[in-house]
Image (cartoon, rainbow, N blue to C red; front, side, top):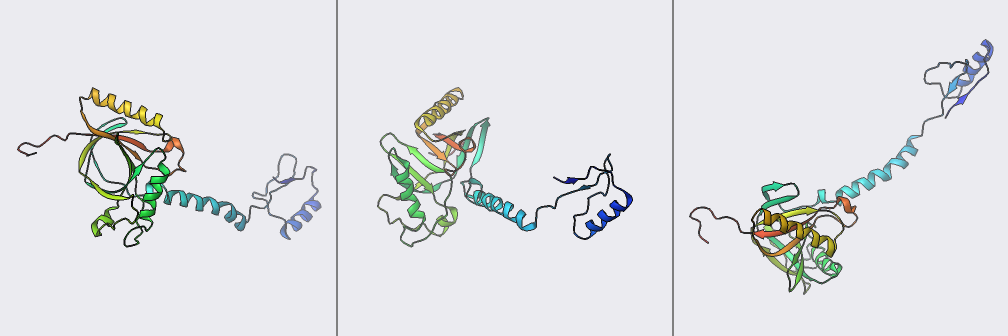
Length: 244
């Protein structure tokens, strides 16, 4: 907001005002007068230090969110065979996973797996977090799994020191996947699975085994922005002459 002098100025008063302006008052941006012959003198702009104090926290917060988001996390590669809006048929390569038994509360199994990648293994090696976190919904035993990064697989995966964490391999498979958002709950999982089974029935696709839920995002991600998926295996058509 500026200071506006409303009274008309004489020639001498105008000269005195310009002298004051040259000696310390901020100079008007355009040196123009308004309809009343008044002179508009703008306030000083914020200093550099004030701008830095305002912008620096926002920049740091943005960098932290990006570096700890799905975009900065390794995810498995797959080939999309067919896409129909939120439904996809995908071919996945073999994946190496670290798994822990899971009850109703997923925090306990998550922390067991997190301790493994944080160094609770035979070489005390720190392993990068990957996405998604997989939840295998077998009827007799649910398990949570972290996918082991490709670089660790190439050099050898260290054995876990925690008794509940096991290493395993998911064979190369074809999956049908449905993407959905929202907070994880039995209700949202059941609704997504029902939609997936309904689409598969329309496409005359027969599921194999139990559903797998995949959660890609950290817990601070807004629920409407989260990438969640439910997947069911299907039989991959064999090539001509290929043996079982």
